[in-house]
Image (cartoon, rainbow, N blue to C red):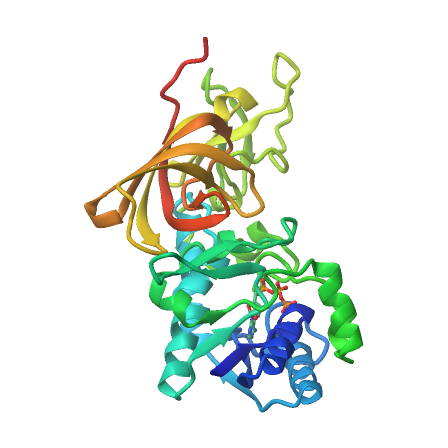
Length: 369
Ligand SMILES: Nc1ncnc2c1ncn2[C@@H]1O[C@H](COP(=O)(O)OP(=O)(O)OP(=O)(O)O)[C@@H](O)[C@H]1O
C-alpha cells in the first residue's frame, strides 16, 4: 500500500511510520503545520507543531529512510478545530478538540489530500487497534495498553475513514514503543508525551480563551451562585473558564455550611452565572446527544458501555438512536458524575468502538432509594 505517515515529531508517530515502512508499505512521512501563529515556528517555541517538532519529524523520516513533506493545514485547522473550540466554550459547553481534529483534519482533510495524491491510507501513532469484522467491515478496538488507549478520540471515525487508516502501535505498550525508538536510532525516544490540547501550550484553557475570545466572549465575568439557595458566593472572570464538574479555581470565599467542597453544576453564558453545589448534585443517569457518528451502521438499541470523557471510566448503558443515527439517548445503568455537554459519548461493545455522539443534555431520572 502507499501510506502517508502523519509524523508529529513525537516518539509514537515516528515508531508508527517505521513499522509501516518495515511492513513493506511505500511510506511517505508528512508533518502537519497546524498553527497559524508564526511565533510557534520560531526555534525554541513550545506548543503545537513548532519548528522543533517539524525538525524532529524530518530527522525521524531520514533515519527511517522515507521521503518527508510538511503539509500546511493551518487554515483548515483554525476554521474547523480552533474556532469550534472557542464557540463551544463561549456557549458554556466543553468541547474535545482532539476528536474534532480527527474527524475534520487527520482523517478528513489529510486523508482526502492523500487519496487525491494516489495514497491508500494514513498511518498515525494513535493507540488503538483495527480488526477485520465478520461481515467484511473494519472494526476499531481499544488499544492493548489500557493506560494509553486513544480509541475515545477516534470514536468519530466512519467505516470509510477506518478503511483508509493504519494504527501500527495498537498492540504495543508505550514503554516498549520508547525502547523500540531507541533501538531504531530515533532521537525522539525520550521526548515527553504531548499535551491534551496541542494549541493551548501551557494547558491554561481559561487564560487562552480570555485572550483569544476577546469581544466574542458572552461575558468576562459574573456571579457564582449556590444552586440550592440562590446565594451569591463569589464572582468569576468569564463563564468560558468553567466546565461542569469543575471544583478547582472557583475561589469561593465562604465554605459550604456542611464544610464539603462545591462543584460547577451549570453554566449560563447569557446571564454570566455559574451555578455550584455539592458533588451529589452532579449525579446523572440519562443523557441526550446528537451528531451521531458510527463505525458501521447505527444501532437501533444496544446494551454496552459508554465513555463520557477522555481518560474517563466506562459506564454500563442502554443506547438508543433515532433520526437515522444522528440522535442518541443513553440510559446509564450506573449513575455518573460531572458529565459536560459538548463532550463525546463514545459507545463500546466490549473493546469495540460502535460510534459516538456529542452530549447535548444530561438529567437524573431515577431518585435514589
Ligand atoms: N502536527 C502533526 N503532524 C502530523 N501528524 C500529527 C501531528 N500531530 C499529531 N499527529 C498524528 O496524530 C497522532 C496522535 O496525536 P497526539 O497528539 O495524540 O500524539 P501522541 O500520542 O503524543 O503521539 P506522538 O508521540 O507521535 O506525538 C500522532 O501519533 C501523529 O500520528
